[in-house]
Image (tube, rainbow, N blue to C red; front, side, top):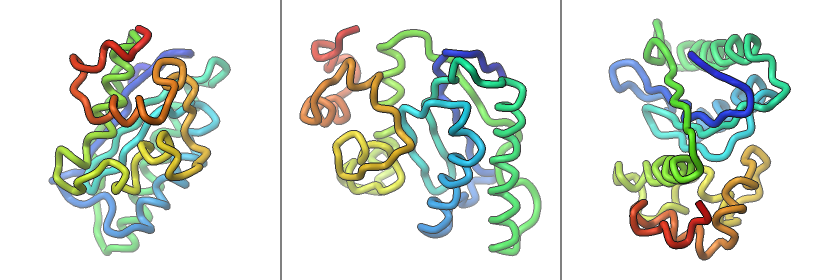
Length: 183
């Protein structure tokens, strides 16, 4: 997994055999607590969405991060969650597919498109009818339905300054929202 200081990445993984990663609400909360414990020190998180069998994060590696330790901590984060789920639900083996994926995002428009993609996951999978109805997404933080501390909103706020514009952006295909972006 390639990670470099001050760069943006789409970080994601899914379960083996399309099993559930999250069986109940407490699992989602536990996963985010492990993410915060092991990765928050190294990453600025711009967006996330936890789905029943996969997850997405859009992150920026902090300038002063120890990259070697960050990579170790990603493994510890996923392994500790897997062990807890295996114990709680009487399963054995790897919960996640072999390797998490990271895709570097090189320009502002791509970053904003990926944030949109991440937030729209629950709609695309027909889990909810409205983005704000999915509890395990950073969308709710961006529209002030929750005052969480995991998300760094500075990047998005620089391009999409109001909640109204963010809602419009979040429900619009990329080619149609270019006029509101300062990119």
